[in-house]
Amino acid sequence: MNESQPARTRPLRWWDLAASGVLLVLLVPGGVGLFSARSEGGDAAWEQIPALGMLAGFVVLYLVLARPAMRRVEAQEPPLGRDVVGLILIVVIAGVAAAVNPSFATVQVITYPMIWTITGYWERGTVIAVLGSAALAVVIGAGTFFSYQRLGAGNPGWTAVAVAVCSFVFAVFLGMWLTRVHTQSEAHRALAEQLRASQAEVAALSAASGAAAERERMSRELHDTLTQTLTGLVMLSEQAERALVAGDTERAQDRTARVGAAAREAVSEARALVATTQPLGDRGLHAALERVAARLRADAGLEVTCRLAPLTLPREQEVVLLRAAQEGLSNARRHAHATRVELSLTAAGLDRVELRVADNGVGPGLAATTGPVSAPDGFGLSGLTDRARALGGEVRFGPRPGGGAQLVVSLVMSGVAVEAHRTPERTSQ
Image 1 (cartoon, rainbow, N blue to C red):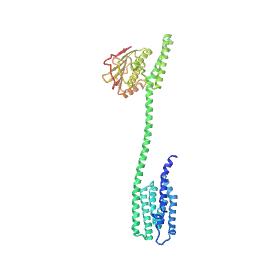
Image 2: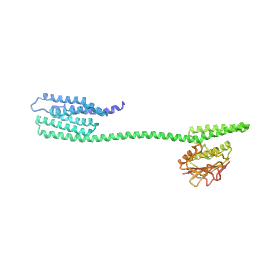
Image 3: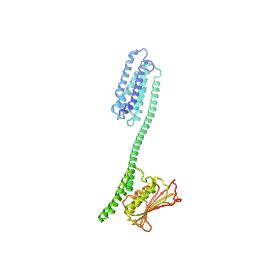
Image 4: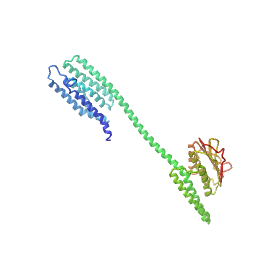
């Protein structure tokens, strides 16, 4: 507030300097000063007393009424009734002073701008300013006519009319032009304010959208990592409990050891998730797929066969394919009650890569399903579909020919070298 206040009052200070300069000019002997015009044979000192009184009255009206009105305009405050009274008195005293001394016509230089400035924020202010300017021109013209006639000047009527008309036309032209400039600047200012508000709204919406996207990403990561690992922990603990009830100490110890290993793996996954590191490890996609398959063999006792073609893929596509393998293997273990699972990674043509997870368990039904399908937990395949679509791929989930279910994820390979045509697939069990 303290920084903006000087910026609002500075224009009024310059106006005060200009008004003071005009009034001081009237006191300078010669030229247009008050002491330059006197009647023939008159006493210069006595003749200037009324003119000095008019000047003093003009200054008082300016300080008491006109300047406070201009300050209210500068502060964009509503006008008061005394502002109208002040304008009327300013116009009247200017005309009377011009009748006393024609040099007072010089006050038009500051009176016209005062009229346009004070009425600028009034309703129909332009019309009022034009009428006020006309009134000032009439009274100044009448006053100078009487002064020129009293002083014996030649053609006082034509001189007064010429001065009044020229002053009025110039004042209206300049006032209208400044009013239009002011209106345009206010419109630009309002537009700039709207733009700033819109930018703030866009920034808020972007932040909200980014937060929502990050929450969705974290949900997917949790589902693909910790949720599946914790599900495995539950299954291992249940197997250990059943082994203890059955008196199978060796199996119970093995399941307990697997629980510890899975828990340590969950801790590593949580740390990687917090650090936002990639889940592939140093050896890439093939090693990560082998680890997922090996863990399923050890935890659930399933027969998992891997056929992995040595494809060179972008890191982002490798992450999606790893998540697809985790999702497919998890569904085979949790829902399909399968005993055998086949995991394959192949090149489908020259521009696509395809990951397939097929099991011999309970299939999803007779009709294959394509697109954003939800797994039984309501999130897995739908999240995987969103991931694949973001990379221009697709997800298909449905019954496997011959029984069971299969999950197929197909991605478009762009700008990568496909070596599957030259290098045989690697099979592991």
